[in-house]
Length: 193
Image 1: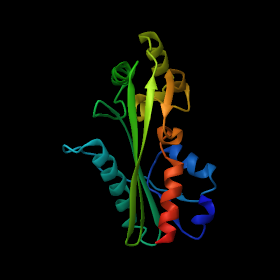
Image 2: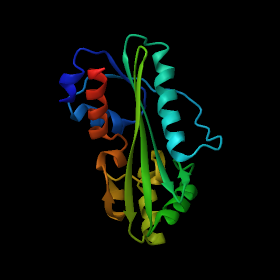
Image 3: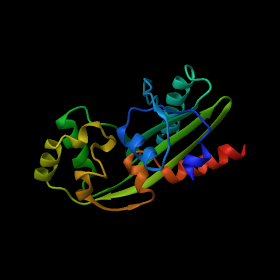
Image 4: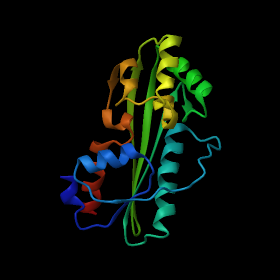
């Protein structure tokens, strides 16, 4: 199990995400949470490359000051027709994002990076999310809850946003912000190297 695999390591989660911290706590992990402050510039990158680049950079930034710790970096994006959809800037932006996702299938990608001294492992989880058609009224009511504002794609699968999801194909925890099953497999690989 995860908490036994890494029980002798000092672990730092390079993220400010409360959902990532919550998910790791739920599987018994003990860690320090230190947000990284990197610039997330696309620079023409494809979604897969971008999400891995960001998760690596987050981990690398924190590793500079925590050289003896195992660092976990992660980055989650929503992709619709190869367009990366980030966190909304304001209510109007959230409305436009949710209108765009309404009635369509999009992908949630999370890049996960583990750094420990010279060892670096990175991988991506991908989940398809199928949205129901959402009325303008429901979108506005949802935005009024405040939930969309700090989330890629302007929704949370674990909260009010769950009402708009018809089905998913892939890892639920990935859509929440951290793919626990993928991370477990990465940790097993890390321990075997």
